[in-house]
Image (cartoon, helix red, strand yellow):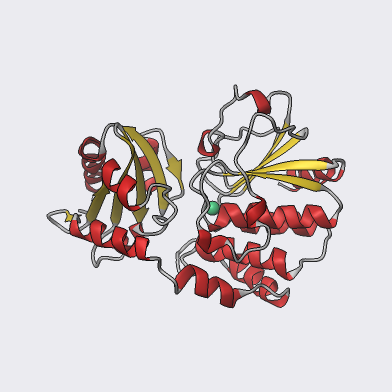
Length: 327
Ligand SMILES: [Mn+2]
């Protein structure tokens, strides 16, 4: 990893401009990674182009630089170096190996998903990092720039949002040490708390009502799921910006070990989020359907509507729990 970091530093510092790409349906960790790295590069007089092809929830607007993130357009002249942050695969950012603008580019892959496909020219992938912002913190430190309050806030947002605000079992002493350092550097934890945790949008409440109304709990209570079909998504949340984290409501039910949320993204395409509470490896379950992520949080995309997707995935979860003999 030290070698990868040295390479990343050398490559970045030799550029005048660098593109930074975050994953689709952006969350606090991928955006925090993108904005913090942009801030650090700016301090080294390196320009950045910040790309995300999806809508970004307004709740992230308190972080400096969010307004600079834009969808990729063919008219863009992209620099030689493209950094992907918090992206387990190119596909999760909406690209693949054949994407024209990625040809002959140096790709830097900085991520913390155990399912990472190692698609970069240089890969800095640490599955033990609770949030990718821990990895970006390493990069920022390696670049030897001052951690400004803006950079600290962006990194702290990633740490907080990928750990359920420092509650999940992915939190390590390293996570907390970095968080403490970021507070010392002026991270705006109060704004984060207000915008991320104490201002649930009305749209999100409507989604929550719908999710709880269609909640299914297995006969033994070990797994539970809910569905938002495509029509409902179009009606309640067409840009998907308010859905992030709602699955925790299902996971938090007493006795539930695995939670699933099915969300129609087209008439015949369903995105599935999976969460586990204590011991299940949902990365493995998602992997059976071509997806992945982390042990406690993963996802996949299944062809078919939400009902059809549930018919495939719910039995797989049941089988996993039975095989692990915890049922
Ligand atoms: Mn992440």
